[in-house]
Length: 84
Image 1: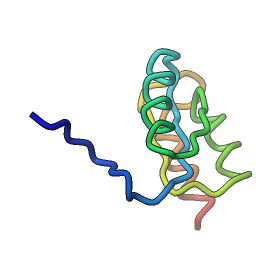
Image 2: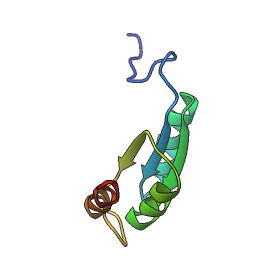
Image 3: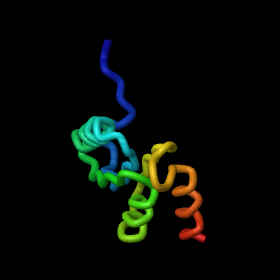
Image 4: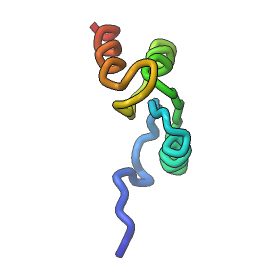
């Protein structure tokens, strides 16, 4: 069977913010995305995600839900407030 992926070699390169508190998940996911040519920043929790979001435009945000300090749901609510 041929391996199927959701990203193909002709896909646009994206700026991605990965918000994940588990170090192993950070490494695995960011490596997969970088191998496809994407740019990846990693935030360890929702508070860090907000700091990154205020400084840089992202095409995609991959957000964990359960994290310390600020969970993913609250972080998304705060990002929506920023966007008005």
